[in-house]
Image 1 (cartoon, rainbow, N blue to C red):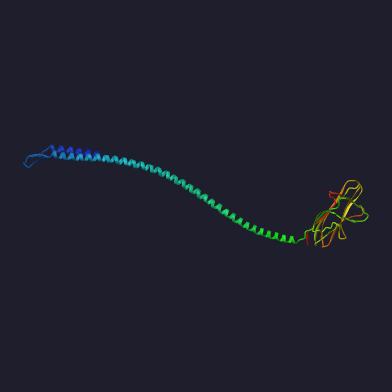
Image 2: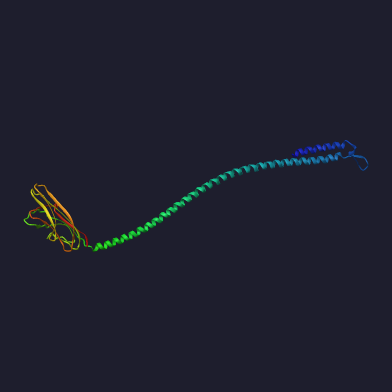
Length: 287
């Protein structure tokens, strides 16, 4: 029940009480002389005073109530603001949780990549170590080959027949002396005798070319090892077109063995500055 309703009921009760007191002799009192005296005015004044006091209290309470309502509304507004801020904060917290979850996933991925990279690095270290061993072995082999090569004889020659033109035909087999020396490493070929003498026991490679152009005749050369016939290459012709023959062979020679080229009886050659007749050879490897 509201305060102003209470005050109204109290006023009605006081008015009814006043009527009861003034309406009958039972409510009168006597003074010290024995004269009747009514007590309504004193009671009414007290009641009015109390009513004023109650009214003032009601006014104060109304004021306080308004202040309280104002404060309550202020607190409600603040609570609403706090709720909004809390909602925003919760949204931020949720976003941060999502970000943290994403960062955690990225961290897991990075850790996996790092582990894979470390594995690859370890593999590379292993491969590098193996390569270092292989390089070291290769360098060792190279050094061995260098040492072996330094001690190995170096033999190679290449010579041309002549610039003077025709050679042959002769009535007997004739040794060919290739007088134009292009290369003669080891000096195993003699431009005086036309012979190659093996300086060491080993396997040698030899090749030759031969050419002639005369209108009729026979073109051919022979190779000999010491006095042993090795090969004979030739061609017969009846025109004035230049002819060519050539061949090659690999021979195992003992130290001191000799290789020479011979022009058979009745055969001829023709040479000039283009070096159409050549004789070459070199040591493949010693034995």
